[in-house]
Image (cartoon, rainbow, N blue to C red):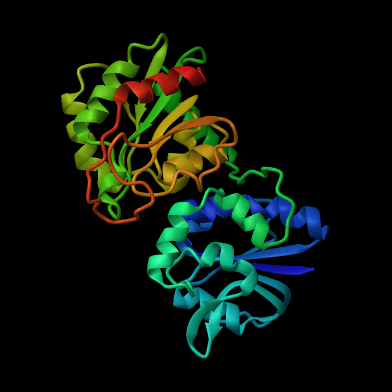
Length: 332
């Protein structure tokens, strides 16, 4: 059985999709699994022993071999084109039909809520808001697999683990310390995914009162200025994890955490895959699609949008910092 998965991005979505691998191997036994992705997601997949081969979409315009099953999980034109051109016995997911993006009937549970929905955008948005299944439940359903809360897979190399250990030593993080990661930014697409700088500062001050707490401030390149402002306003200690780490160095630092407080972002997906305890806050994306594997708490705003998926919400989100702190304490 030869299977080709086409899942290009974003990195967090690629990572959470690795949860299907165990289900595929449980059903199809000694199958051969290949994966097509983008260069930016390669490092997330490269140490995954459940994947036999990785193709990069930037390097592969056409795959000439035959597959028994193509699983196409992106609705962009490039992914749909590749799914249509590959020789296969069966496709599940998105593909091209007369140069138009569409999807197989058995994948309607997912793509019916998306941009290429046959129901139109308005109904797709309604279905998205009504959905109460996690992403993993949906994937297992459309693939005809038995869902047993199989987890995403992220394997760190010895070199990456050593990077985390050296960081801990440098910053005098001990084994008895309660390491809490703080990731309150979320890149640039959805403005209201972020916790405000003022709320983030308040949160840091209150978390620092927890016994043996050591706080790590996380962010990517887009959070450099934001995290600088947070550090200036913060009157208690916090360790800056930096905003220019490579993807896997970032993951190795998340791996130091006992608990991660995060927006719905790549950091959250990495934390989930590394089996960390998570307190995640959501706006404007769906909290219901996220599987925390009984290791976390989901926070939604007292005011604000959930599942609107607007780049800027009509109502700015308002979070209760004390609720977040209480949730952290419940996981200790």
